[in-house]
Length: 161
Image (cartoon, rainbow, N blue to C red; front, side, top):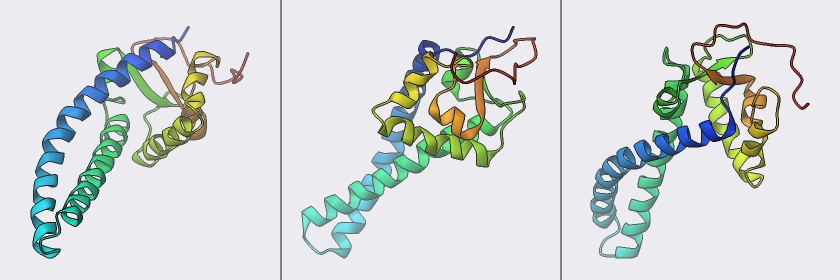
């Protein structure tokens, strides 16, 4: 039988991804912040508050794009998962076990925002659904399961049981 990626395994994978993104974001964000601060102070005159706000907005925009591309590109690539998921032996698939495309991976990423906005309930659902799907998985029609599982995916499973 296929073993789906459970709640705690996915939490640990996300922690690994968050560490990787924090390091990359600090490096890239620092460069963007410095560049944006210099440009903002040049264009806004000597107003340090405006320069700081402009630099922060630029760094936040870069961070948002970095996170989106990290998840969407890796989950739609031949790796079928982020570095955290791969470290824990999990892959992201469509409901038939196939690789997902960039569009579906992007939809899954933005659906995670909805999962978080409802007090994290969309993520907690992973612990209670039969195929260990969060709200974002249900919206994007995806599954996360342990790589190397040789059994066929059970596509007839009900969401809650």
